[in-house]
Image 1 (cartoon, helix red, strand yellow):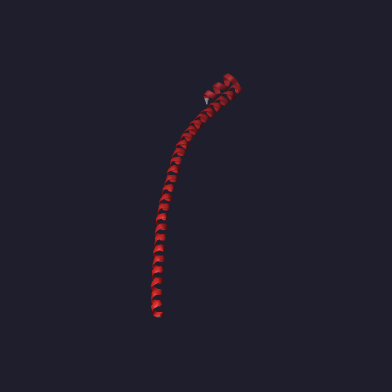
Image 2 (tube, rainbow, N blue to C red):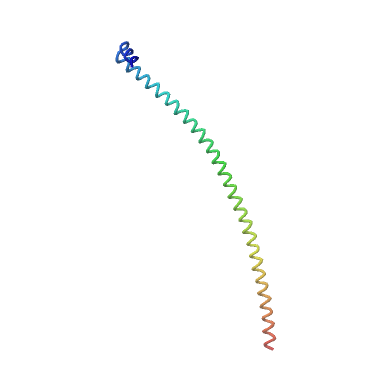
Amino acid sequence: MSEVAELYTQVGITGVVVCLFAMMIKSLIDKNNEQSEDLEQMKQSFAKQETELNSTYQITIKLIDSINEFKKDVNDKLDRRHEKLVSDIDDATDILQFIKGRINGKGGN
């Protein structure tokens, strides 16, 4: 406090106000520099996160494509199996109709 009183006696109230104003400006500049450093760190962190997110996105897309391809292969196999079963059932139905016709034909004579 004695320093302020001594300063006041030497430069007057205007000098004290100017000194306080200079200290306030210095404090604001220091805070601004700290915030700029923090912002730069955040930018770097965001860039890393963006890279990781992009990598995760690419991996997810490849995984989905792989699953879709697998499902398509399975569906193709199931479709072929279904078509084969339907064909076999049609053949069995034709044979059964033939046998039924033979039996009905003998029974009628």
